[in-house]
Image (cartoon, rainbow, N blue to C red):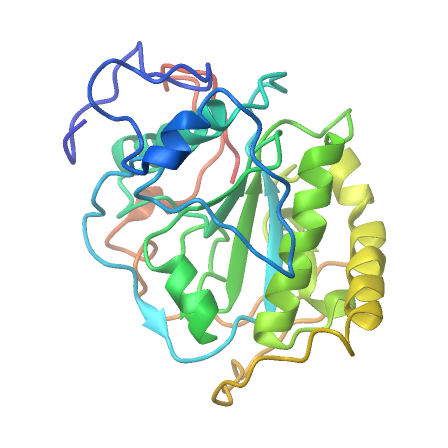
Amino acid sequence: MADGAPASPDLDGVTGTVPPDGTVPSDAAASRLLDERAPLFTADAPHIYTRAQWSARSPKRPAKILDRAPDHIVVHHTDTGNSTDLSLGHAFSLSRYIQNFHMDKRGWDDSGQHLTISRGGAVMEGRNRSLASIRAGDLAVGAQVLHNNEHTLGIENEGNYMNTAPPGRLWASLMEVCVWLCRAYDLDPGEAIVGHRDYNETSCPGDVLYSRLPALRRAVADRLEGSAAAAPKPKSKPKSKPKVKPKVKPKSKPKPPPKPNGGDDYGPGNPSQYYHDDDDWPGLLNLNW
């Protein structure tokens, strides 16, 4: 689908079917795995499926890069159906669907989130330049938390977790991704890992997943502590922290920093950056992130 083209009612969605329109992944090895489960992600040997592998569209413009680390990792859910398809083909299809939704429906430059985790545990790059920025200790500005995009990094987790827990493969990858990010940015998981609802009025990431964030913080902290000797921190240049760093306290929401002036996907130039209820979108997504 070309940039700016209207969404199609028969968009390939989250069926796991690769459409016969040439949008198959460019990586031959990934193509052979389309109908198989992705290997589980580990922080010690992180494997992120690239935008090229899931056949991302070109962004309207490159993501803005900040020469500093994020101070929070924001956990989201996609609010899509809880698919039983754990294949890589399904995961790639989901990433394309989200990108089309964000670009065609919301008018954003690209996918809003930095990383996407499928119910099968596959971890994919979302917004352009996200993977390179994480490796460099920088931050690609996303569009995933209203007024807080310039100091946070967002992870989308496939599914709806209002009344059910995420599957084991997704949970395992989410924990390992958070370990990887906390190492890369020298973050304390007890302070850094938050839910979308800690910043905005939304049900995201779902009641059940949100209730499990304390367990996620503990699991990540245990992994970091247990692997500290075996996995020394990579050498990198010091990164300045944002001037305002909200802290999450039990049963309270962090106070957001002052709204930045401008930014890639919010502000007066793009009033559709954030809203609820998308009943007119022809597909399975009804996203409130």
